[in-house]
Amino acid sequence: MSAPQSSRALQRGALGMVLLVLAWEGVARGFNLPAYTLPSVSAILGSIFDHRTTLFLAGAYTFAEAFSGYVIGAVIGIALAVVITLIPMTRNAIVPVATSINSVPVVAWSPLILLWFGIGMPSKVVMVALAVSFTVFLSALAGLDRVDRRSVDLMRSFGAGRLAILFRLRLPTALPLIAAGLRVSTVRAVIVAIVTEMLGAYDGLGWVIYQAVLQVDFVKVWSAIFIASAASLAFFGLVGLAERRLVFWK
Image (tube, rainbow, N blue to C red; front, side, top):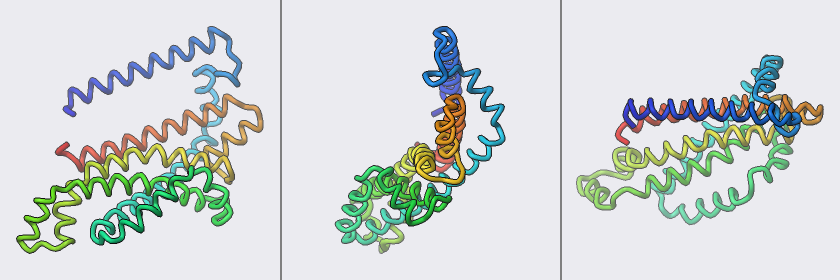
């Protein structure tokens, strides 16, 4: 995407966000909706300001969990795809196992993960890594498999081994799909971290949301959701920026 196109897309996005906020504020205030139905944006922003220290620390804690699990999951996913590419006979063992593990909703694994790793940060990192690894694994494997067989045969005719073909041909070809998988996984990482925190944690946005629900403070719930959305958008944007830098030929 060129610079003018990117600028226009940014302007349209900002305009859409402003219109959404104005419509939200108008509906909430115009119909005098109760907080548990839909609080006004101004009330949510006021709550964010009032609880800014708590929300900032909780957001930093959740982001640390999400980022740590994201990095671990991405490494595992890419590594598994590379192993299958280098040792094709492992495909029939790795793919069914990975698929069976991820066919179960991530939340269903939470009780076991919390039991094994406790309700501290390690369990959240494991859950995020579990969720991210499969998404990145499928993207990386699809990218590595899309290489033209004739190009592989040509490199082999010049004496290139599996590792040379991997680093000089397969990985560069697979990079756009790997980057797409990494970008999509950013939002999933934050979601999984928050959901797992709601099931058991010492800190984080999920814990703040759970406590606010118990206290019937629905404005604070929305405040934590706003912070989580901002963190997800920032994470998504950073990975997207890195993608544009690395995959510059797209």
